[in-house]
Amino acid sequence: KPVWVDLESPTPDEKRWVEARYGLVIPADAVDEDLEESARFYEEDNGELHIRSDFLIDDDVTPRNVRVAFILKDGILFSVHGEDLPVFRLLRLRARRIPALIEDAKDVLLKLYDADAEYSADALEGIYDQLEAVSARVLKDDVNDATAAEVLAAIAKEEDLNGRIRRNVMDTRRALS
Image 1 (tube, rainbow, N blue to C red):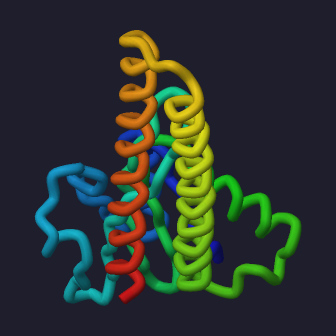
Image 2 (cartoon, helix red, strand yellow):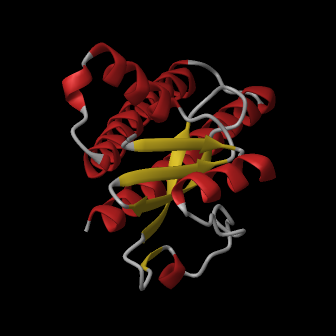
């Protein structure tokens, strides 16, 4: 019996297989971005626990938050998301190297949130490094219009990532409480 079933962009056939094998119906809006706050954490009458959280992807293309739906049912954690997440890859690698790392489904969930907090902290450190470099450039160089535009763009990019990290940390805190 697995403790974690991770579904990345599941097809209708995969969803039907999960339903047939585990008796779990994955809601159609599982990873919708526009959910009300009250719909992000709830327990069904049958005991299923539903949690929807955002996880950070900090890459060079477009830093973003990716919605993940978690369903805890009968001791199995099901996760549904639209793209591969670095913290999920990290936990899978760690669990393969150290089999005793994961005891049960709740342990998987807590370790995912722990890895996400670690990932967010690393991204935040990267922001401070980038802003320090921008600051040094502005304070040491003569700034022309082109340089000012580059500096503003760099600051805006880092501030966007900073906002995503803050949102991600608040979401993790809510989920853990």
